[in-house]
Amino acid sequence: MRLTDFSDYALRLLMYAAARPEQLVTIEETARLYGISRAHLMKVANQLTRAGFLRAVRGRSGGLALAMQPERIRLGDVLRATEPDFALVECFRSNNECIITPRCRLRGVLKEALLSFWDTVDRYTLADLLLSPEDFGIRSAA
Image (cartoon, helix red, strand yellow):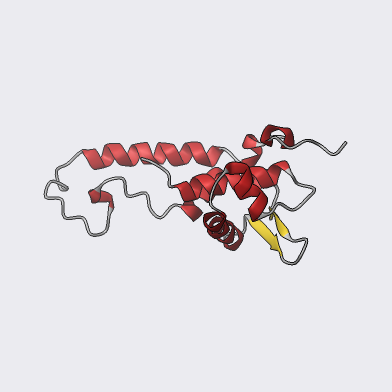
């Protein structure tokens, strides 16, 4: 299993916003910081805003901020909002045509593994990933 870049960028954007709670972060600065596409990050930010993890402030001095406390943002919820699907193999899909599905034991093993994945990521929140601005290479204004 592999998470998409979209989910990776979503988690990184949330981590950056959490590290700077007193100020808004922008798409431009975040894209530059991580060396990723501004256009792609804009799509990620829009999805996170629609899902209620970020709030967007429009205007000249606008930007993004967490829409809730980091302790309330479960990693599993972020991944459910950003990943297209978790159909690990054909038999997980609605259009399954595998001829051995009725007798195959693989589905049960992979379902158990996927449930373990969800159990793990649901135990952690954004607060468990908190970094300081210095961890991002940002010097404090003091």
